Length: 135
Picture (cartoon, rainbow, N blue to C red):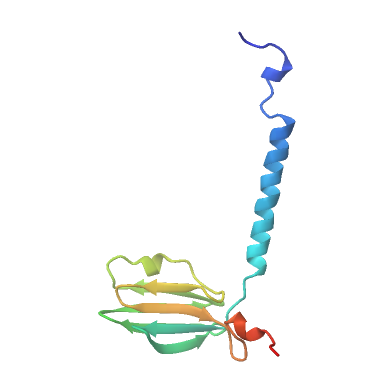
């Protein structure tokens, strides 16, 4: 039997709207919390097969040719971001990666064993354990 009246034509009830608003507020708070925790980096560190091959400032535009294991990559530092623009590896996952600029972010080329990571600048620490005072 079908109900008649205004209840059958309403799409959302009051409780539905409250629940949707609750989840929107939680999502917005999560985004704010994640973005507050980000720290802009100042140095790009390039590592090939576990050996640091170079460190470059993020505030200076540069193009870096990286000779990896069995191939080469091109790293472009521009506008405060580091981006892998070219690689002669077969999958090119590193080239498809978004540019990085925050401490802890990295671009990795597995076939060439290349790691490009953003680290804190000189005089700063990237490990928060050393930021606390002990007695």
